[in-house]
Length: 108
Image 1 (cartoon, helix red, strand yellow):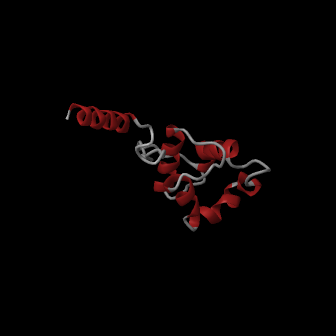
Image 2 (spheres, one colour):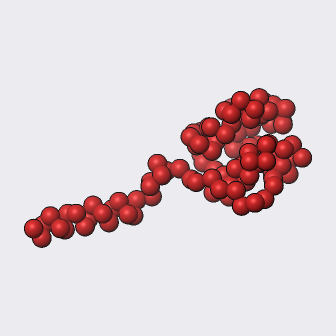
Image 3 (cartoon, helix red, strand yellow):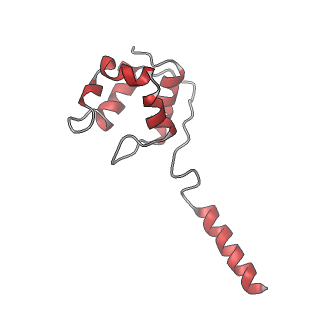
């Protein structure tokens, strides 16, 4: 009985300490700020997505507008968190993007 209790305690401990509680995803949460593409979001996109090897057409508001309007941006960046490939966004960046999405993707 003591052996089973020890095993159960170890399993619970490991599960509680797991970093991957949400599938490794961050939880987007808007802090009430109102970022704009020109003010804050362009910097994030340029540093993480707009390189020549990834999405060179995403270096302008007009270049990214089609994927914001069809829901692909929100789905891949916030929901699935499959972008950016090969790196990840910080919680602060995810939160800013969530606020931007909530506000309807304002340009400036």
